[in-house]
Image (cartoon, rainbow, N blue to C red; front, side):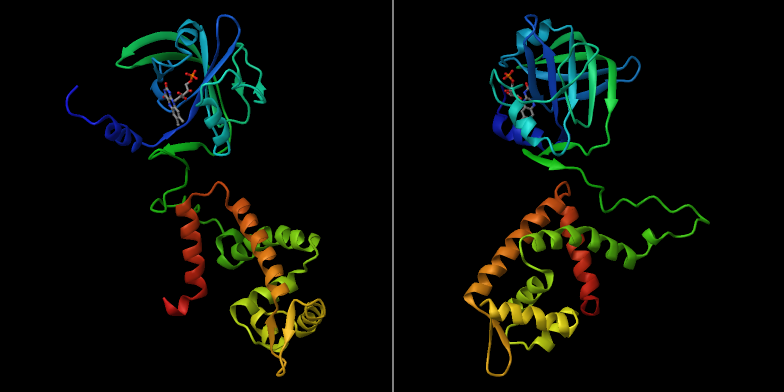
Length: 307
Ligand SMILES: Cc1cc2nc3c(=O)[nH]c(=O)nc-3n(C[C@H](O)[C@H](O)[C@H](O)COP(=O)(O)O)c2cc1C
């Protein structure tokens, strides 16, 4: 070999972002075979053909060469665990894995983005790998987001911010989905309603939580000042403040200003932990770039006088 560094070459290959598939088949003795593969590629439309390559050191080489059919299961963004499972040498890869029916008796993974059932058309030599060619005999597409692999890491797909959204049809009236205020309101309700319900179920009314959060940023405020700042009526804020004082979460100073007690800080960190976990759930499936863009747009809207 020339002076190409194998590790660097691997890193270079990794710069090419791919989806992730699990190739599955039945060995001649009926054993299910499956391994994670990102070397999959479409090959031909007519006839319909695909290819992928297999490391010659794989435990599954002989069984896959002998299998008359194999399936390409294209993983969805919520199937990272499946990818890791099928990327490790084990006899128990299929334990607890949900399968769906196949006309070709193939182990098809459920809830994938798509699958292709292929007739095994043979292999070609490809250095330390074998190139498998498959003739597509059946396929199905779902509507989930694909799991990606780029730079040696799992990733999710997002529309590039530089691409334009489809233009609205000329002459069509703008729907409420085209105006920013209804969009902001609806997204707020969609996210906040279940979160506030979770807080309530934990015995923390939303007004309590908002008062604690606000006082942690700006201590020593009166109930009136808090009400103005968080835009909640003074009667509700006064009731919450009384409860929080009576239960030791807030301390009232001589000038009626309020500060968080140690107990208040504990309740606040409970609220913040719940909020962090909830936010992770809400943002699951969005890329880091999308999340950064959303946050920066919202900050620009909030502080628009300053930008
Ligand atoms: C993201 C990812 C992509 C992979 N792509 C391939 C591939 O294209 N070909 C291959 O032979 N192994 C690939 N592997 C490694 C195999 O999944 C892994 O070696 C597996 O254990 C082989 O199956 P075996 O246990 O039957 O040998 C990949 C692993 C990961 C995590």
